[in-house]
Length: 146
Image 1: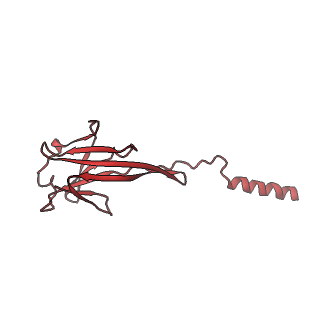
Image 2: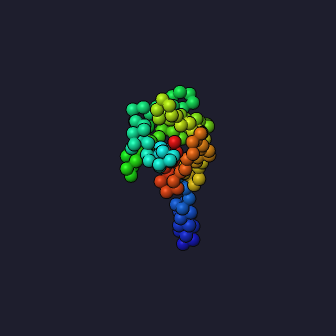
Image 3: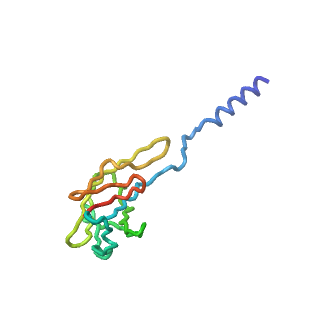
C-alpha cells in the first residue's frame, strides 16, 4: 500500500511541475503610434480641412528608409497610423513630412521586457521636436498641434 501511495505522490508532483519550463507563446508586439495633426488655434484636424493631403505624406527614419503608414478615418478625423515602428531597441529618429513646408520630427527609444514568460515592448522615451503634443490616456492617440 505504501508503494502505491509513494507512486501516487510522485505522479502528482511531476504532473504539477513543468519539467520543460515551456511557457507557451506569449508575445505582445510594440504599440501602434497614431497621430492626430490639428490646427493649434482651432483644434481642427488638418486633413479634414485639407491643409494636408495623404498624397504628400512621406515618413522616413534617420537612415532615410521610408516607413509605411495608413491614414485612418476615426471619429470624423484622419489619424496617421504607424504600426511598423517600435521593433528596434536602439534610439530612432523619424520624420513625418506632411507637406514640403511642414515636417514633424520625433525621437523614439524602445525597450523589451520579459515577465512570467511573456515578452512585451515598452516606450522608454518619446518626444516630438518643435511642436506641442499630448497623448490621450484612453486611446493612445498623439495629438500634435501645428
